[in-house]
Amino acid sequence: VGMKLCEHLGLEDGEKWIFADIENESYDKLELNRGWDTMIRPATAFRFRDRIFGNNESSNLDQLFEVLGKWKDAVYVPPKGDQATNQGGTFVFDGDRVVFAHYDESPGTHADTYETIKLALDIAT
Image (cartoon, rainbow, N blue to C red; front, side, top):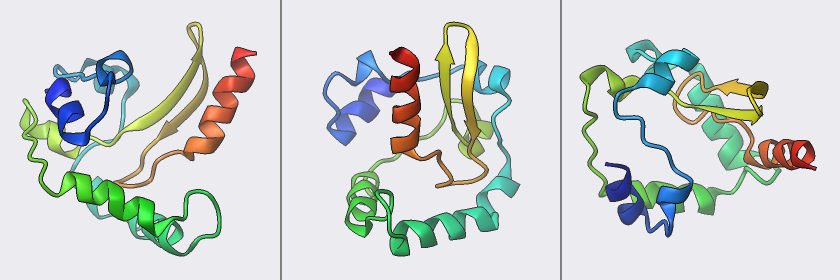
C-alpha cells in the first residue's frame, strides 16, 4: 500500500522515510484523533483560510493545488473501515523521549513543517 502511494505521488525512495501502518498499531498507541466528527470541525476551514490567505511559508495557494492535484486520481481504501477517519500527527523524538507532539484535530490541521524541521535539527545538533 505504501509503495503504491509513493509511486502515485512520484516520491523517490519513499520507502526509506514513509511508514505505512496497515495494522493501525502506531495510531492506537499514540491515540491519534479519529472518527467522523473529526471530518467536519471548524479547524479545517480555518486552516484552509490560513493556507490560502496567510502571509508565511505555509500560505501558498500554488502548493495547495499542486498537492491536491496529485490526490485527484488517488483511490485508497484502508484495510480497516474505521481507518478512513484517522487523523495524523507530527512527532519529534530524542531517543525514547517525545520532544514535540502535534495531534491533527481534523483534515489539514498539520503542524507547521518549517517549525518542526527546525526543532528536529536543533535537537540533532
